[in-house]
Image 1 (cartoon, rainbow, N blue to C red):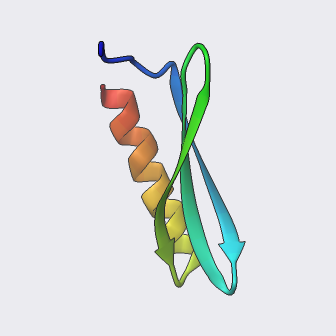
Image 2: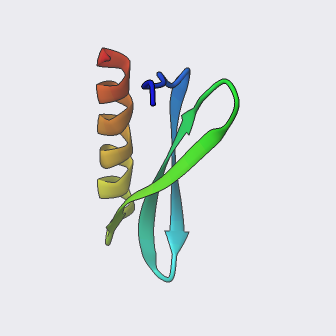
Length: 60
């Protein structure tokens, strides 16, 4: 199966049961694939993790 390259990567930080969850969504031509990337106790930590994911995605 050939590898596909995502058009874009979007991250979302949301609160779930008193903790902060980072979701990453890879956007392809034909679909959007979401993955839960981490759970953090503090919102600032989750936002930092989301920013790191965005920076890494832009390097590729």
